[in-house]
Length: 188
Image (cartoon, rainbow, N blue to C red; front, top):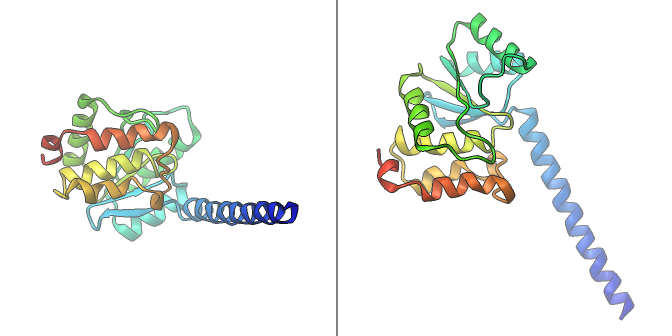
């Protein structure tokens, strides 16, 4: 009986170890490549916080013409200073939006403000937050429904583990917001 119990425990530990390695590899991959993905090719892209070299690379490669920073106005932060300086040097507009938190859904007024940014920002536009998973996922899902006219089921895929969004714990507020967002608003 003891042998069988030890074998089961070793199997469980092995499975958990494999899952931990796969999770760590996914996190490393997302971090290493900036979690950069198209939302709509030639129109909108999403990413994590990019450093200067990554930002310059993606701006040139994908002809990015504006940036929507979903982390908000943070002039005292080094990342913000680097990003706004790089955008200025590249001659592309930089917009700050502080209406979505990784664990805080936007108000209807904030959604309207974000949609206005979507409509008025030169394209292609880059949407980003810190990790490119939660805030960027919700913004990308909103883009897909409002700008692209995609069905909610398709847009919902922007909030997925493929982009680093783990719908467990406090970040589920974003999933709930999108799932409960009125269909009339989704259809524009």
